[in-house]
Image 1: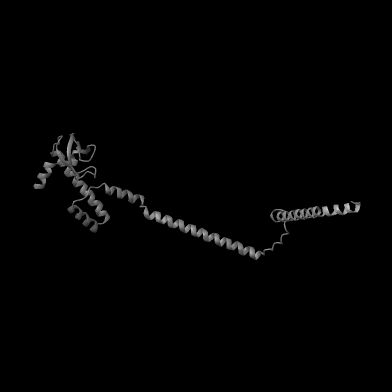
Image 2: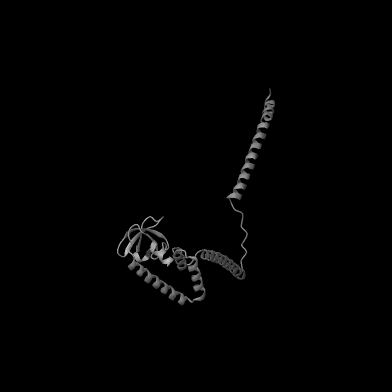
Length: 215
């Protein structure tokens, strides 16, 4: 083979390799340019920013007024909601002094029909001062009668008595004398764990009460 034929042969053999190398170089360039373009978008060289539009003083004032109005509206709404909650809570809660009065009323023994009618009539026809004065007179009359009964009766253990004074919870109930002293006594009541401590004038013997009712 001559030198000329060898050179021609070598050139033909390298054509494919040269083309392949060029394609690889072009691909690498395209990949690099694409990567640089992505970097520019995400964190690379930023595009030039447009100049800010200058806000006039009138616009600043209007925006400030709008923000103040919105804040005032939100505050007014919050205050109204809080006031509504407080009002609802106050409506459900009774005043402290009234709650004490109601608790005291719960401790009173129930009245009989005649006594309840008298009380209703007194409440309907008497002033507050007259009711207070009447209550004092009733207490005095009751105490006087209890003292007279205490002087005329002798209590002994085992006697049946009706409670007429002392703790309002037990007034009207009948029990058994557990222990009797000169002016004090202990009365056992059904459903009550401990004997009730009373003045002897706060109880009436069942037999004496029956005789008084019959007379």
